[in-house]
Length: 273
Image (cartoon, rainbow, N blue to C red):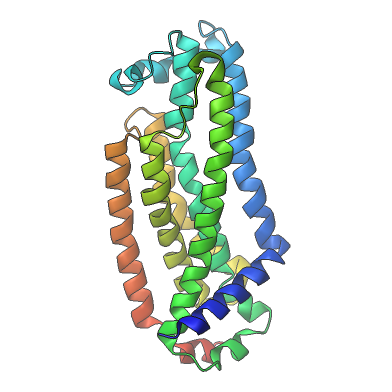
């Protein structure tokens, strides 16, 4: 493969993304809402809440369902408010965090070929002296690298919020823990791979960015199931569970990327122009 050509295509794609309001606005707003505004608002509410009131009954119910050993490693959390706050910061927001790489990769991948068609630049790209595999790899790596960068920045922002909220009783930097490091370094890249693998396939077969994004929206369903399972007390993002989720996602990624690389033909794209 021509890695020099791959690098040039990646740089071009990321430059186009940075200049597109339809792409860049969600990449900024969603992380701010999911990883800064929501945890900060919920954390402030929990710190000042009377958990014996009906308004806080959902939090106490979730805490009662939670295996005790998950919080026993944090003896600083002596009150119910402290324990609920740690539960929310360490476990409740974990599946929401996975929405970040999935969303970033999906948005950029949706723009991968469909956006080229809208901008009337796809024909010039197809005629570049690169192989089908080189072009496909470049179109996959662009959203994947962007998703990883946004995920790391998002983790740093969330870590600041989490440590500030829990500092009054923890008295130390406790976040990120081992489970969140696994989530960031192992699960998040796999989640991004699933999103971009699906969206590149969809994007190469439709005509507009909006069509690609709408048709690829189903890729968030597995993460929504994880969110429902977490809220319902069925699953918890421990280190072991995160490792298993990551393994499952990587296997899905391998299948998607293998199928995409095998079926991608620039001639078919040219015929749809």
